[in-house]
Length: 165
Image (cartoon, rainbow, N blue to C red; front, top):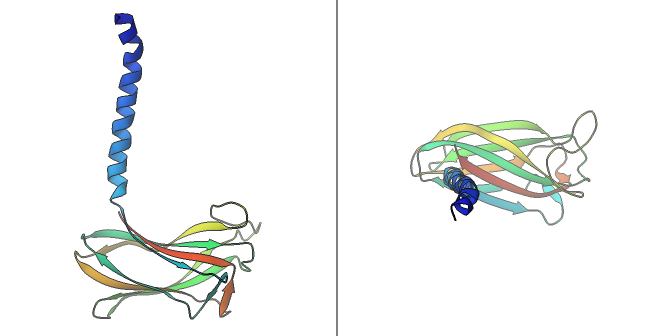
């Protein structure tokens, strides 16, 4: 009986330690994700008139990162994308207004950046890095594409995601 206990004792301790570690990491990272809004483009093009607009209520005071998740396919004609985002408070005062260029395809090889299978890829683009928001504050965030063409083909879906750091 004692040899049987010794045999499984180390395995039991290992399972217990792994379970506690996974549980603690779940608690730590599950509170970070606070918001997601998707804009699904059925015709596989993103028009300049089609803006992603949303209101976010930041319940906790803290530092946040805001990402734009972009799903695109092989019909996307450029290696980059220009995006404009505007953050306004509830009184319509502009807090942040920027136009940023992001790489979608590798300039040299032309291979798509991001992850995914078959012809569609997902890429996370960091819009706002480490911005502090006060408690119970409501903000409006607008994202739009700023490319030369009015209709940008090859874009399937856009999602705005907010994470607490």
